[in-house]
Length: 495
Image 1 (cartoon, rainbow, N blue to C red):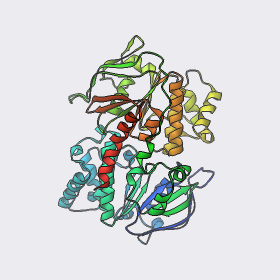
Image 2: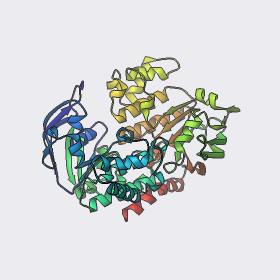
Image 3: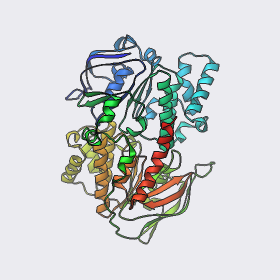
Image 4: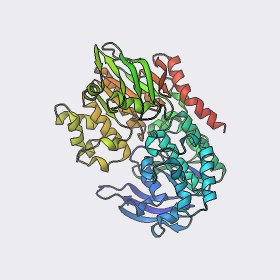
């Protein structure tokens, strides 16, 4: 059992507490969904459950947290890890090895289990989570979604009684989300206690038996599964929550594209690491000008690699990007494109959020920077250090920097990872604004609602090749997109 008694917590330098007088008990074998808007305290609460607060994250803590009767303030992280397995929003933060098999084995080895038991755990987790193709590989070669799956496997390999997962689906494709749901269903059937902090709710429908809704650092609602599912779509939307059923998105449409010129063309594009088989092999593909195009596909399909190559970030890339009579090679693309990376920590350099925005402007304009920060709900943190922000806030800073860059082609790699309903829609609106001004956007994403609100076209990439290219102009086209995401989830619901 987990028991929080009158718990409040504030991070160093914070003007207000991240958690305020939390008292809640979670019974053994419960499946609990933590939900609420970005910054509501979900991640902080999960850090109480696994002991990262107070043993890793500094701050002011009052009250007490008990896990299986242990006071977390008096119990080491090693001891707590015997009871609690964790999956973080950014999986890179929890890896200890450079190869995948060693990472799966790390937890059981660290707990002193015999070699044959460790090998059995690794094999079992690989089968359950379909990780076998990832074994014996460098972690650095994995896609973001593959890293997320590996992190889930690492937590499962220790076989704890409690699992705490923070945004585990944030970078997962439809297949991997199916595998994640299957894993969670298996843990529930085994009587494990499962606590999932999530913005994307659809894949969890039918699994959770309790919902804790958080707002402003407090538990604003405590629902049974039946009570929560009986809320109308409008009520959940008013709470800032994503839909429980993707079918409800069928009527969502993005504004029409503003075509300003001939289509962009990718010609004879290829990429391979030294001594390895090609990751990309695109002979010819087009996407519309003055519009936003979603790049979809399964984890490891080459989506992020394609985005990096198009921006000129990969020196080994071959091919040209053709537009308006120009045939741009890598160096030209470096100057003409802007990219928001999947891990935005790699592109935040300045001492304040305001400086970060000004840095991206061809001609720094403080008034325009203030305007974009207000539009992204970042005005209050304009003078804060970017690395001190939440994951969702960092994502919005990077998106804001892209929007003020005035580059003709802007690429976004999972721009809604970690964003709640409100901020996801804000990013969609800003991309709509970007394309309405005649600029073009390419968006790598696994977020169907975001695609329908922000994009007018789809490129489907699998195994480094474009397998489908279609617009989202008609209801049939939108149903085609939703079917790609719904099929795997429905299959998983029957497991």
